[in-house]
Image (cartoon, rainbow, N blue to C red; front, side):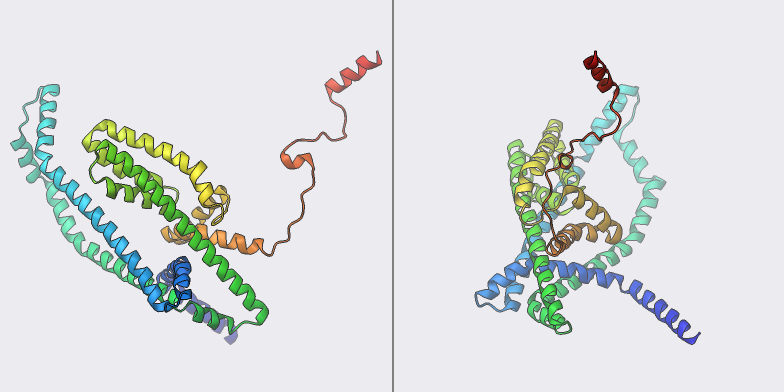
Length: 363
């Protein structure tokens, strides 16, 4: 009984500790896959004589500058659009009031509408709730920055101390297991790095194509919108294409409604070109998995880890598939027509037509 109670207590303690450390474990998992993604670049610079710590720092510096530049440009674009909407709000309100007066024979005035909005209970409650939620938003922003710093720190150590980490892991395993672990590690590096690099190349092509369209239509902030479409459509699985195309369509609608239709048509056509021509050629050697398997892995990853699982599910499944493919024995497939989907009639009772033909032959 004492042993059973001790086991139950140890299980409860482990369960409680696991739930308390779930956030940290997810951050470490993200950092590990990020370290695997930058491992090829760091290894190339280290092979040329550069220290791994300095090589990792340079890679992180380039990524940080690129991310900061993108966020700055996107923030300036959104701020400019918000200022433009605020400045044009009186004109929009006047046109709406004129339409209501002409359609419904009303006698509304802009002053009356503005006074009603300023003294409405809805606006007062909304302002109070917004003021109360500022603290929650600040806490979420600080928490997100802390998680980002945690991921960056762990990924830096994983990439900079990759050989030491592999050596420490192999030191507790027998020689036969060491080769398998190192092989799995190399497969994970190849698949994760190949997945991210192929996605980055497709993001570049997509961003340039959408930039050319938006620039030709005269849509403002075309470079930023091109980068937005490229990154969001490639690095957010399943719904990334729709999220990426929504913002350019909205900005194009402010210029001319028909421009939004042209952007929608181009997004749909380019998505078909990417799915059937561009993506199979770029990902054939890096992440060669069936689209149904990729879609199922995204669903499973989302159910387990949310957005993080959706991002790392495809390289994780590709790594597992490549690792299992190295150990699963394959056999030559026979030339049976059923392999190609052709049905073969069995030797059972003949059908009605066969019996009629046989009767005619006998006659």
